[in-house]
Amino acid sequence: MRIVFMGTPEFAVPALARLCESGLTPVAVYSQPDRPSGRGLRLRRPPVAEEAGRRGLPLHQPERPQQPEEMARLEALAPDAIVTAAYGRIFGERLLALPRFGCLNLHPSLLPRYRGLSPVQRAILRGDPVTGVTLYRMVRDVDAGPVLAQRELAIGVRETAGELTMRLADLAADLLVDALPAIAAGRLSASEQDPELASYAPRLERDDGRLDWRLPAIQIERLVRALSPWPGAFTFCGAFRVKVLEVRAVDETARREPPGTVLRVGKGAPPLVAALPGAVEVLRVQAESCAAQSGDAFCCGRRLKAGDRLHACPSCPAG
Image 1 (spheres, one colour):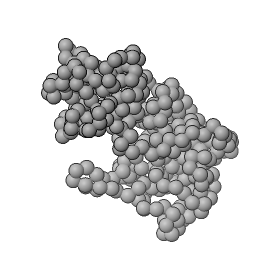
Image 2 (cartoon, helix red, strand yellow):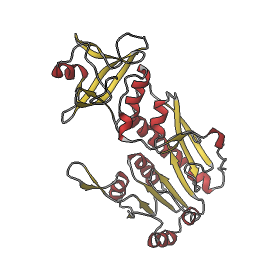
Image 3 (spheres, one colour):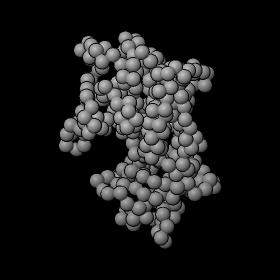
Image 4 (cartoon, one colour):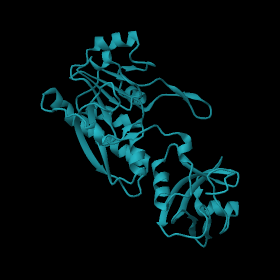
C-alpha cells in the first residue's frame, strides 16, 4: 500500500512511527514549513518533520500542498491513501480525489462530536468521562466525512489536555495500523456521520485562558486542565499576570466572600480561593518572568493574606 503521510505537531508523530514499524512506511511525508519560535524567533522544525528526518523519509514542507508543483509531485507518487493527522490544511477536490482509498484523517474525538480544532480541550471543559479517536474519509466539509473506525478512551479525573492528547495520539496510531490493511482488503466499510449529532470545537485563543472566578469551582478546575499547556489559564494579582498551572476543586459550598477572594493562606496548605459557588486550592502557578512554584510559595512571596483578591484583569472590580 503506497501511503503519503501528512502531519505537523507532536500528536501526529506516533502515527508516523507506527506506520514505519508496521511495514507501512510512507513513500513521502508532508509537514508544514519550519516556523520562527521562542524569544529568539529561531526557525523550528515541526515534530513530524523531525521524525521524518530521523527515519530518513522523503520530506516535503510546502506552504500549500495543492500548489501546482506539489500536486504534480503527489500525482507522480500515485498514493493508494493519503493519511493526515493534525496537518493543518484544508484539501480541495483534486487532492481529495487523488488516492485510490481516499484521504484519511485521524481526529481526536468520537465524531460527530467535537468537529474542529480543539476537541480534546472541549471534552475536558464539558466534563466528559470518555473521548476517543476517529479515522474517517475526508470530504470538503471539515471533519464531516464518513467514519471508518473509532476507539474510545476514558478521561482521567486530573488529566490535562496535553496529557490526554498524547494518550489519544498513541491510540490513534494503533487504530491506523489496524485499519489500513482492512481498508486495502475491502473489509472496512464507512458509515456516514449524523449531522444532527454534530458539535463543534472552535480554535482556542489566548484570552480563553482568562480565569473568571465567578465560575463554579469544578468548572475552574476543568478550565485549568483543559488549557494546559496552551493557551494556559491565567489570573491577576494586582497588576501582575499569573499563570495558573494546577488547581483542585475542594467543594461547591456557597460563601459570602466575593469570588476570587483568598480564603486561606499558609499553615502548610495550598491557598484556598473562592469561586461561585465553591472554592479551589491553587496548587501551582507561574508569575511573569519567574519559574513555576507552589501556590503557597507564591502567596508568601507576594505577601498575600486571607481577604485579598485575585481578578480576571488588572482593573477588574470583581473576580
